[in-house]
Amino acid sequence: MFHIDRRKIKRETRRTNSKTAPGISNAIIEPQWKQEMWNIMDKAQQLSAHDLGHWIIFHDRWIQNLHGPENRTRYNYGDIVMVDLGATNFKYEPQYEHPCVVLASDYSSILVLPGSTKKYGKGFSDIIDVPAGNGFSYDTGLQMNSIRWIHKNRVTESKGTVTNPHILKEIDEYIIWQFPTYRDRVHAEAILEDKARTLEIQNLDRDHAEAILEDKARTLEIEINRLHEFYYDILSKVHQRDAAEHQTLIEQAQIAGIDTNKMLKSS
Image (cartoon, rainbow, N blue to C red; front, side):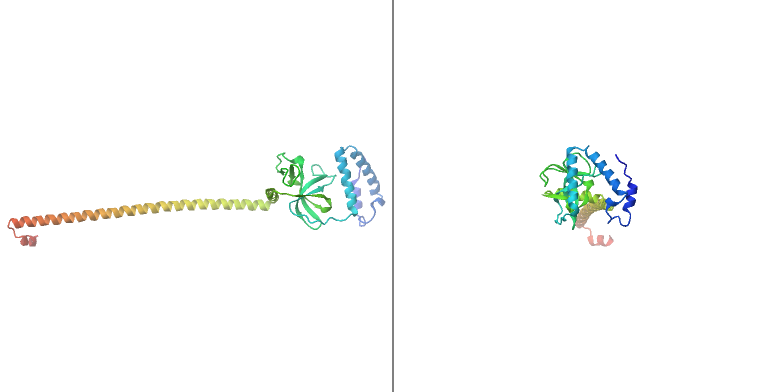
């Protein structure tokens, strides 16, 4: 492996004419380029047929794209497209050709969510599993941590659209949940809802207590009315008894020859 002096090369790229001057005529860059090509050839020989084949396909597309026409197709939210994500990605970044869900589209670029059959059913928190038959030909795991903007020229084929609206909703909810301001708002709304439920319970308890008091008041009012009726009934009977006894005394006095008028005056 040849050593590549990236610092020297970067210094050359910062020169004022670096974007217009041919790189092959630069005394620093040209020999470094040849050595790097040898490094690439050495590493490419160690690749599997799968990786080397996709590496060749990507770079062939890259060469054609340098001077080829631009893709101006209008893609819609939820469309499924095959995308060449590159063949020189770092570590676990998606690479090669994969199905992707279109999330947004502008004049020359689209925001895509890559999918992979190998990610399906693994139980990863950042993967949304989509069974075959929802717009995808195979069981596919949508890689939520790999959403990216790409140029439309990376699209190699249109495959259809996501047919299950619940999947799109799950995608949307995952995306917006990544923003701290949204999480804070959801948390604040949850607190408000909890307070509202507590207040509602308190109001229900108060209404229940007021209903009990009103019921007791009505019961007491009925009892008081019943006592009043009982009192007036007793009082009426007492008056009737006193009147009867008074009349009996007068009659007995008259039989005995007593002047009842004098008795009434003396009494």
